Amino acid sequence: KVNGLEFAVADLRLAEAGRHQIRLAEHEMPGLMATRREYADTKPLRGARVAGSLHMTVQTAVLIETLVALGAEVRWVSCNIFSTQDEAAAAVVVGPGGTPEQPKGVPVFAWKGETLEDYWWCTEQLFQFGDNGPNMILDDGGDATLLVHKGVEFEKTGVVPEAGEDDPHEYQVILSTLRASLTADGKRFTRIAEDIKGVTEETTTGVHRLYEFAKTGELLFPAINVNDSVTKSKFDNKYGCRHSLVDGINRATDTLIGGKVALVAGYGDVGKGSAESLRGQGARVIITEVDPICALQAAMDGFQVTTLDDVVETADIFVTTTGNFNIITAEHMAKMKHQAIVGNIGHFDNEIDMAGLEKTPGIKKTEIKPQVHEYTFADGHSIIVLSEGRLLNLGNATGHPSFVMSNSFTNQTMAQIELFTKPGEYEKQVYVLPKHLDEKVARLHLDALGVKLTKLTKEQAAYIGVDVEGPYKPDHYRY
Ligand code: NAI
Image (cartoon, rainbow, N blue to C red; front, side, top):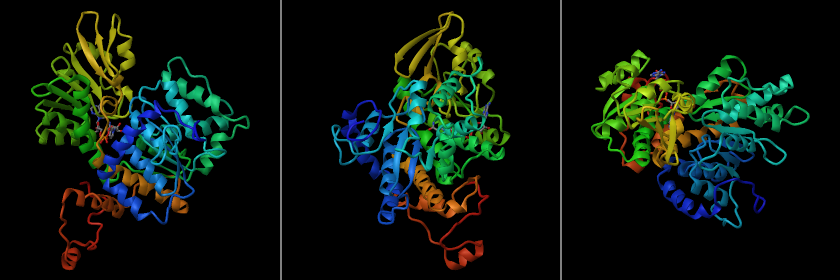
């Protein structure tokens, strides 16, 4: 704690470097900056206490400072142990008017290279706004939301169970974090959940968790699925990954991608951007899919579609994008070519069976540099694993660039305003933002790219049955 401000970041002296990057990012984030101007006087988030769990990058810094400009009190953590940009974290703590000696910004608990114990300790810090808890959550992947739901579940039964022998290590860490943080009266998370007006969720994996909670009636507060705004998933997941996937592979390995065979598992939004990214570098890209529609799309886009088993011994680069688990098993990795590159750009590290790889008899792990490891098998051949199986675009590079994140984060900000200012209008269900707001987000990003829109005439609008000012498509339209 310095100057009354709590935080846990790598080094506050990095703040100046972070602030320069934030300044440049602001210019590339017209949606967020327009939102700041629009709400400068009304400050719709005044009274909001936002617990944010989302990769602590330069772009996220601009989001955090937007929420603050709109009146919110904010605490922040990263939603991944490797994704923090330490200079961005430092700059957010120091704040625009502060110094490392006199920080005046926002409490951030995040650094690059946390352990899982650190990670859940940080996440727990989100829930300590003085004597209060938060009244809003902004989540990416659902870990902050999960902690509240688990806390409430255990408070109902009065005990935090012991983890079973087969439970993953991370679950054991969650349980011990909760054991240490439940209050004597056994009502801490119950009170927090009652105060929370809602959660806005950033990504496919977190949204999946929310729909599961809603289906079983366990969802404790209303939720907005930001991921499925068109201006989020059809932009960030696709064009963001098109940029940051090869960025991560290049920074990690500096291996020429052109001419290589790259396998992309999954052809959803992230898979489409990833495949294009690798093809753009001249790789021959092969897709695996379970969904016949996505498989057909991949084929029509000119990619070979086959199974992993078919090409595991011949491909040079493997990237998982499914949001599913156990896509690349330890047995697969043992069969790969010498120095094949293996990485994941989905949300969690279980797409690649890292635990199984570590247990392979005779395996040797060599750190080439942080977040790049060579695993050598007993027969002498090796593979290169990026970010220990966690999302490589944030672990090995700096994630998506500002312009695309401006779209995602303008949706986030609008979703926070919706849930915070209209609590009576939302049930404990999962909602998406209305289409007119989705179109507004897109509109805010056109000028910067010199886009000139054609205007519908009144007659044309009547002919296709829409309003001259939009929305221009029915809700079921797929883009
Ligand atoms: P999506 O649902 O559009 O695509 C996933 C695809 O994987 C689907 O088409 C599905 O049929 C396919 N799939 C599932 N199991 C498979 C299997 N066993 N083999 C082959 N394909 C399989 O989801 P989206 O939006 O593309 O997100 C994917 C993951 O990436 C999620 O975990 C999401 O949270 C994460 N994400 C990561 C980002 C990053 O910056 N690293 C950005 C956005 C999303």
